[in-house]
Image 1: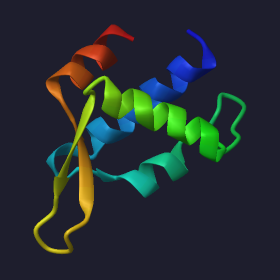
Image 2 (image 1 turned 45 degrees about the vertical axis):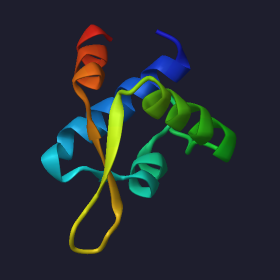
Image 3 (image 1 turned 180 degrees about the horizontal axis):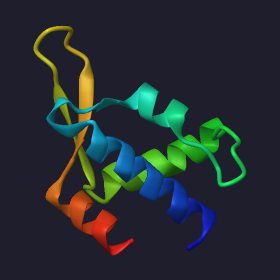
Image 4 (image 1 turned 60 degrees about the vertical axis):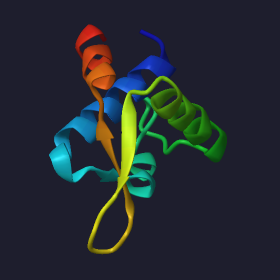
Length: 84
């Protein structure tokens, strides 16, 4: 498993742990780290976010109280996580 795959797996796990409530994009991206513990730079964040959303592994919904976009794992995302 390469570095990018490990980061994506960590991202999917984090979204899974947020449950039905979902995860804010900013919180998720800020929590992700490279295998050596470094924060992701903006380019890395963009690549990872593009993979998560582009492959349909996470989906966004507007929360009713504060109208923030929260992201949850899709069935495809769950399958991907299980296969990693």
